[in-house]
Image (cartoon, rainbow, N blue to C red; front, side):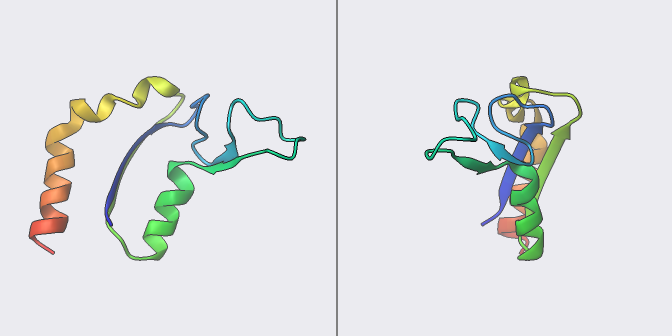
Length: 85
């Protein structure tokens, strides 16, 4: 399944790489480890799957809705994957 990711590298809610949820204490039993866009797209790359990743150096959560500003690129990527194999 192809994916599209827009992620600030300094996101304070969901880690860009692998980390903990912002509300979780790493020392407690209910600690939740999360994979962000970077390890997910690395796995997609290993699986030879299609994806589009836009990373924003220094960006935080403000980039979560930016995909709407890039809809032509997103649709072009989907078009390429779904319609042109």
